[in-house]
Image 1 (cartoon, one colour):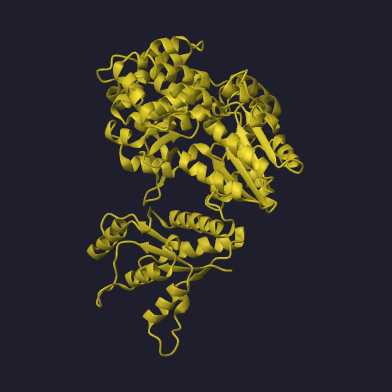
Image 2: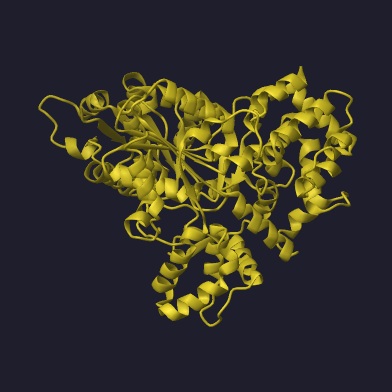
Amino acid sequence: MQPKVFISSRLEELEEERKAIEEAVSELRNHERLPFTIWSWEHAKEIPSGKHPDTVQSEGVHDSDIYILILGVEYGDFKYGESPTHKEYKIACRDVEEDCILIFIKEAEKREEKLEEWIAEIKDKDKHTSKPFKNPDQLKNFVKTRLRDLWNKRNQKTDIPTIQTVLRKGETREGDFFKKEPEWIDFEEGFIVERKEVGEVIKKLENDNIQLVWGESASGKSVILKNIGFELANENKDVYVLELKKHSRDEVKCYFDEILMSNDEKAVFIIDDTHLQFAECERLIREFKNRELKAKLIVGSRPIKEIHGEHPKEALEFEYLSKTSIRAGDVAETIIRRTLRREDYFSDERIKTVSEKLEGYKKDLWHLSWALKAYNPEKESVEEGDVYEKIRDSIRRIKLGKDESGEDKFLNAEDIFLPLSIFYRFEIPIERKFLEDQLEIKENKINQLIELSEIIETEEIGRNRMLSLIHSSVAELYFKTYQAYPALGDKNKDKIIDKCNEDLQYCLFYKYITSTDTSNASDIFVHFGILLGGIFVVTLIDKLLGDGKVGKAISDIGKVDEVVILLNKLVEDKKVEKAIKDGIEKEDIVHKFFDTLFGKKVENAIK
């Protein structure tokens, strides 16, 4: 089957955009073997005898599988009531499946009144999702992603993102050592160091179809998992990647159900960030084994003892899996060597000297990446201050693309990265509405940073949208940079500390817990519980719902570290304590706390 795509738009006004869609279809066909074809007005210029052009257009829409509508500034000729494009849209609504109607609206300062009315009508009906775009290149990328997803949904029967989608295959043309996340082109052009563990895991899959890749935070697990996916996709496997931090719990549950329905030998499912929903992943692995599925499953995790402590009473599914351990230090030397060779053409002796000076950065690959960015060839070493200076400048000048004259455009993100870094260093997302309402961060800026993959947005049923940074190590580095430079984000620092008379971190958590839905308060304690160990949460809940002596609950825990100190200060306040109690009673807290691996204890504590 060759799905037919119908392009609907004003012809002359949106000529470049139409060409961009044709290129998107051509690239999917030639590079990814997705057999889409195009029906467009240009291909129907020879009108059959006796047929009106409108009839040909109508038949074209009717006979197509996917309808793409592009709207710009002009509405079109409405001498007979509606423009031809508007009529085509109505035919599509009647004849084309709802999820195969794709609407893209070009950003513009002013549109014709009739078009504004039509766009408002589309949005009011909320039947078809419309997506804004800036230029033909961006439109092409959006169309490729949607067509790819539609193909996978129809043919692989799963909505889980493919490795091609995750790595943005065909969407970027230039490789780089220092992208926030690796892309297909980076693997193709050798910007990613292929570690020996990639081949080891692929080899192990031949004998055991479930594999565990584990390592400390920022050890390179995620890159290895994507590298494995890249290699297997090139072996004609159908590879799907599920990064749990990028999806809500509701989405993850649906995706896991889809995985358990798959019995295709060609299918490979890669799951990253399992520590965020550990018990749910345990259940997936158990069911995957019990059903003896033919598909393959690869999961990435932090070390087991880091999640549940040294002496769990019950053995975990993860402990019986075929494991591959990852350490940042194993690849740090190669990354340094390859970067310096490619960027500065250093000799082996010079590289060795520089590598020794970078020793303190090798345990965290995010830290190492920033140290290499900050490296000055005229100096032999990189000081911590050099790294923070580089991060400060980067936060203030995030590349946004080019303006109409071809000059680079930049975005200053110091206001939004401040609260995100404070929260996500503990892997806690923050409510978007809070940032917009309380800290007055502009909606458009948030959308731009999401589009640039600088921040992640998730949404659960019945909850406001949540935002996070891409990694806790990135958040930690940003947070330390804000501490090093008092003027960085100073306006929002003042808003956060306003009348609080405490440190910045405490004030933000306090403001957030006491001014947003109480569900957020319970969420914070879920995340802290996972971080510190389930027994912390059990003790805390027992006290909260028992005699209410929260302070004593925390003092009973032997892990006196930054988190405990922060919590101790927070729960001394009656408003915070009440918010936590209300949140626990309101939410399905047992389900959430299962992910601390002490769910049964929690259930007993609440009962």
